[in-house]
Image 1 (cartoon, rainbow, N blue to C red):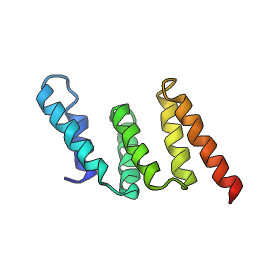
Image 2 (cartoon, rainbow, N blue to C red; image 1 turned 90 degrees about the horizontal axis):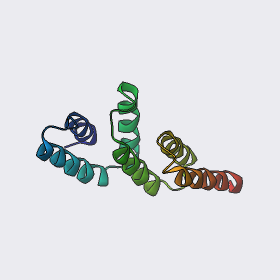
Image 3 (spheres, one colour; image 1 turned 180 degrees about the vertical axis):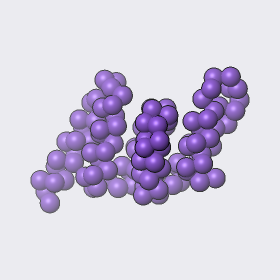
Image 4 (cartoon, rainbow, N blue to C red; image 1 turned 30 degrees about the vertical axis):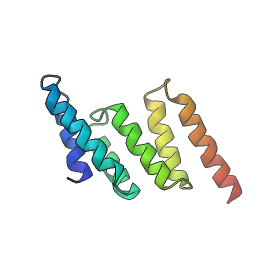
Length: 111
């Protein structure tokens, strides 16, 4: 299963009725995103956001951005995009978002 399919399956399963289907969709999404390259992760996140910004659960977005940042730790645009997404769902993750901004600033200053 590719990531866009897994993400759409996850979104569709969030009806709150069939918990087994939701758990299966969560497992499939996690397994898929774990081994997806950063470029594809970012494409999927942007595509989902274009259709319905709030469709994907925050934990799924956080995980996807975290994995993209781990794959591309020196990519200032990815760090800032991830930080912006975290700030959209704060304040629980604001400290993490500010840390990503700080890292991006350091990379820019060093370059």
